[in-house]
Image 1 (cartoon, rainbow, N blue to C red):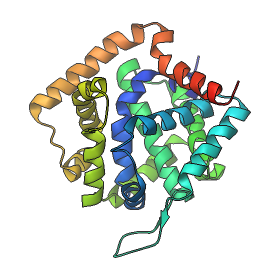
Image 2 (image 1 turned 60 degrees about the vertical axis):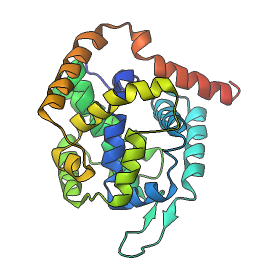
Image 3 (image 1 turned 60 degrees about the horizontal axis):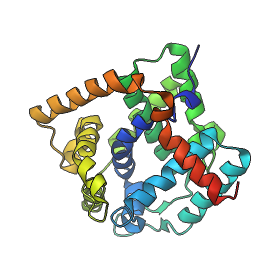
Length: 260
């Protein structure tokens, strides 16, 4: 039976790709400038993670009322995020469908890459179904339905067309440092950050590692490969309720906040 978005989006292991997705996003010049000028990653990293995961889980698993509520929250957060072209830097607007398309594309590409490393390759039917359904993360906001490339081949063309335009600036390197080496966080999060950094660097395309100043030494490559093997051996064998506990927690929190 073909797998779909609902079969994979709730897997907590996908959080291991969060850093990679964010760095891919901010390497886009307009997204990067907007995040650099408006982000609060340094002071509220867990709040940012909570907001992102609540949106994803609500869109994939929630009711229409829940989707409407999280869409309203995201749009409210995005409303001040805009700026004009200045000193050769691009204009940006968080409501720009092209920028939202890139953000959704990084979430899809990162999730599918990591999921298949841990759970194994999709069959062709599952791969196309997951791809088609992933577009909802963009189209639930301002991305027109027709803007999500119609199939994986078209997506690959889109992805390859954007990669050469990515640029890492001093501003976005600063944001990356704040993400990968947060200071105002609980001790438990500090304890897991070395592994989070390793996963982020290991999953990034090589050219972006260099641009962000993130080295992947042979030793770290061996550690990364070992962790992937451990995840692939252990995670699929865990009970589903454990693997999807983050999803269930975030949805429960959302429903409590809505008085359900």
